[in-house]
Image (cartoon, rainbow, N blue to C red; front, top):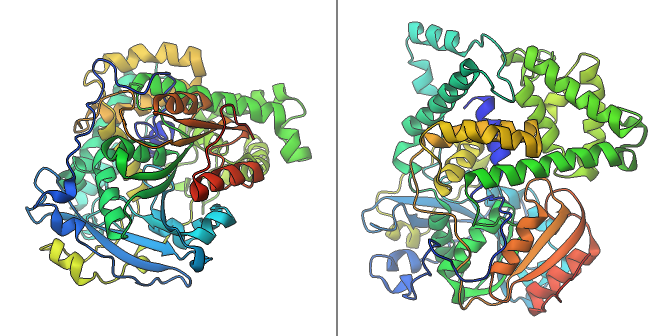
Length: 556
């Protein structure tokens, strides 16, 4: 998958699942909304009983202090008995106060494409408050197609497949990848638009080629059904759940399908399911633009003298200057930079780095400031390094399946190595499947001018990024207001300066849930719980542990 597709995903950042919905609505669906979930218990279906009858076989993880297991779920819920399955890694951190243990608290760290089991082994349990950790086993899992899931999504050929590629084809591929120019953040000409559409089509075709059989089965609604099988396998009568970012979309889907199986649910960094693809792009891209403005205005509060300008105007001008330079020619990087093979950082890569630094200002604004200053002086190496993520060894978390899983999963195969591109592939695959997109290119070009007006290059780059979904397999989800009659009070947490899931999304989602509660965090960055605010921690933990409601208008 090329970098333009990755930036798309970043811009899609939480779309569909990461949906950036700015509409407000009541708790019942309007015309055209999703149907209310059926009341029949899936566990009573004979073809699903083997899956619901599993009990997890826990063993020590490769990382001390955690236990690992594997869960088997059907590939296709319409035909669960056909022998085709996903096998999902699961990990848990035991409650620190076992004498007062309430049960399991399942979380999703976001994405889509973030691996919950691997995140837990990297210390994700530390994001939970002491009260929650004392009373719950903290449980993470890799959703279908993600991380250590077997099978896993990939948009790249296997290593042996690449090695067998004829030399002539390799040369042709290399020639095709050599850009005649740098893709602009706002494609205005027919040539630029044709190139953007062709690149998006190629990215979609690559994913179809290498992940084809599972592409239609990695949507959020199916992942939510897996979550219910996990609940049963953990021995829990009802689910206690916390989802960040995309995890709010997964939690919402679960609440709609299994409203009476929810004990407590926290949705932090909310995605409103009622927006269509264009509304989502406008909402999220405007959020990033506001956050970059916040950075320019408030840089000195966090980065001090390291800010790349003395005034907000100087900082904005520098960032705009880098975008313009990178559109003419990639910004130079060192030979050991991950961008060296592309000839440097193009405008999409620069925008990606700046946008991602908005997620946690307390950690990222200072290094961003240094990186911007050096990029302006002619060396973008540090800017390119901002987005580099440490590779996690998913293979280390794999454990042998228990007999229960083997019985439920005839023909389950040994896990292959997790593809390097799995996070990007999953992000694109799930977003595109969850959110319907036009098949014609015209609606995308029509959206460019409104996006430019609403959010500048953040908007136009976001629209262009959506082009990959144009050639993607269609899912069954449609934009709709939440239908979850019978669900207990759900706690939605919204951050006023959230770049990726704008605060309006949280307001809207809380209003859509029956008896939904909204906790407002007045601050910057993406999501609130787990980032150190004592007020947020206390209120969320009190709800999770004691089911204590949050008062209307509650603010931290």
